[in-house]
Every structure is written in structure tokens, then in C-alpha cells.
Length: 180
Image (spheres, rainbow, N blue to C red):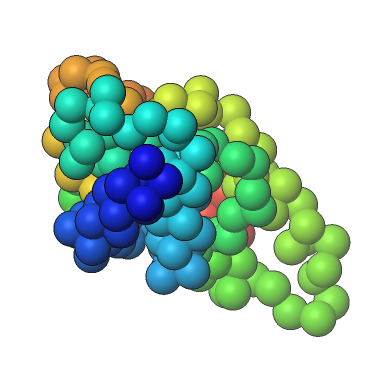
């Protein structure tokens, strides 16, 4: 029994290991995060007492991977300004860090803190759903279809959320840019 279970786990790792890693790596920022998530997936599979009831092992593995990716992305973590550059409909690209670089000098540390507060407060004001769609689509280069697969939301809903996020951030960053 234990020998058969061990063989099933080995076969799963051999059959799906590379595919799962590629799937995960395409949705996270670096290899280390992808390896951590993949390890969590294998750990969860190894903790199942009886693997036999899982009818479609590949579907189960990809769903668990997707859930682990979402868990990692939902965790509150510090974000850098470069993560929030965006392009408007006219093709103009806004880089929050460029705004800061233009005005910051050793004497303006107080101004720098004030600007950082404005930018981060603008991001914090976005509803989480809008912020996630914006970050995934613009910064992690995920398609709306990939986001829809992860979240289970309608693509039109995701597009609408991104549109609201972009409009809000554009307005907030434009005011900051004009001030300096």
C-alpha cells in the first residue's frame, strides 16, 4: 500500500513537475517564489491519505497551484514605486519613480516622504479587486483570460475593474506630477 502510494507520488512529480513549474513561474516574479509554491503543491498532495479518489490529478494540481499563487499575491507586502508605472490612452507613460527622481535632492527628504505618502495612499485607496487586476495585467503581464481563470470572474468585469483603477491612478498621479 505504502509502496503503491509512493509510486503514484513519484509518477505525479515526474509527469507534472515541469508543466506545473512553468505554469507557476509565469504568474510569479521569480524562480524562488515559483519553487516555494511548487513545493507547497507537492506537500499538499503528499498529505492526502488516499490519492485514488482524485479523478483528474492534473486538474487538481493546477487548481492547487492557482490557489497557492493567489494566496501569495493576497499577502500584504511592501511594493516599490516602479511596480505602478502605467501608460494612458495617448501613449504617455507615467513612472512614479521618475517624478520622484526629478525633484528629489539631499535637501528635500521631507518632500520625498510627502510624495511617497500620496502615491501609496492612492494605491491603498483602490479597492483590492481593482488593484489586483491592475497589477496582474499591467505589471505581471497576465492576460485577462489568465486572470479570469484564476479568479473565476468574467473578463468584462476584470476589464472594467482595470479601467477604473487606471482612471483613478492617472488622476492622482497627474495631480502629483503637475505640482512638481
